[in-house]
Amino acid sequence: MNQFNRRDFLKGSSALMTLASFGLLGMELKNPDGPIRTALIGAGWYGKSDLFRLIQVADIEVVGLADPDKNMLEAAGKLVSERQKSGKVPPLYENYQDLLAKEKPELVLIGSPDHWHALQAIDAIKSGAHVYLQKPISVDVIEGEAILAAARKYNRVVQIGTQRKSTPHLIQAKEEIIDTGKLGKISHAEVCCYYHMRANGNPPVQEVPDFFNHELWTGPAPLRPYDGLPHTRWWRTFMEYGNGITGDMCVHMLDTVRWMLKLGWPSQVTGTGGIFVQKEGKSNIADTQTAIFEFPELNVVWQHRTWGNPVDPEYPWAFKIYGENGMLAGSTMQADFIPYGEGEEAKHYDVVYEKEEYPEDVTEDRIELNAAPATRLHMKDWLKAIDNKTLPIADVEQGHISTASCILANISMELGGRPLKYDPKTRTVIGDPEATAKLRRPYRAPYVHPEPDQV
Image (cartoon, rainbow, N blue to C red; front, side, top):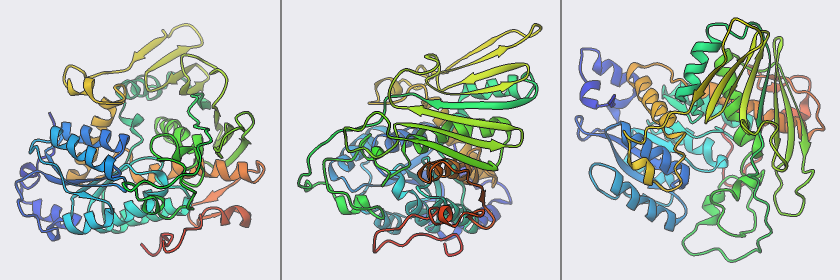
């Protein structure tokens, strides 16, 4: 197993230079031969899942967990003690800033809701940690620019949780179909999600339980009346905390297409949609949306519906890349190459599981077994990038482009579907002051929106 071990990291005459370049010499390492000091901010389902994958492939000690839900935090601490080598329950913190200040972790994983990503990532970077940040990286475009600026300014390696780039069957399909040119000229791609994943209830306003710090959980976002614990799907149904299905699910598949086809920023983004069917609940995210991401001689078209049937039942959350000679479809579960003419054979790629190598996967609560191998590879790539002083496969800049593109699709939809051309150099929407103003969401006092030139 390819583990990131500080003993190996310190070998060689260039070790001190490497440590200095990353600022690790100033981190007061008490035991330079020990495991890597690691912390998790956001101790919910996916944060724990990411941490458990890292425990499986690296020599780490979890030195802190942070979450504003005391019950969830204590449960996470117990689970971590059962998974990490030391068997210790890590220190538990309500406020992540206290964790960063006291524990000084070298690695920080962030699995909190989207509205907290920017402040937590920037604070972790500035504390000296390398960061694994869940997607989407931000809730507005300028937040993403600020995270990117901080990563570059402080020379931290920031890996984004767009782990389709580390999904074994998609890597193989890319290498064998895309990279060899079997599709010919590629001029169209489709990305979609037809999962019925839009929570849409009408729970009553109620008293905040003692174990949950609602004020802290809300942070820089608008303070909604408390109507139950926001964990899992409930917070995602409100634009106050995220960017709807497009921000949650399109970011994965758009990012995958961009990776496979080596695409940068789209030249133009257009979005349309709204709440067309599921109007009965509190949810304010779109239940239907279409977006067009325009690249030179190539459009990537997104479609989601949280009602009705998928267009292709085999690929309900997926991408399809169309070339003149064939089509490649892919998802978290499979991929298929379908040639148009004769001379090439169709090819199917199946998801890879690692249940024999990691039997603990089978009994882990709510684990996505199909995604676990990809996340492990993603963690290994992150640590390798730290070791080699290189960019990881899902570097923060690429995560920012994919995230911001989805946010622009939402802004376009909000503005009636007009096309938007974002300029990352000026950080403006060209010729559109109204859209430019929406690149930065207002923060709730006393929180201050991060700015790229002031991180």
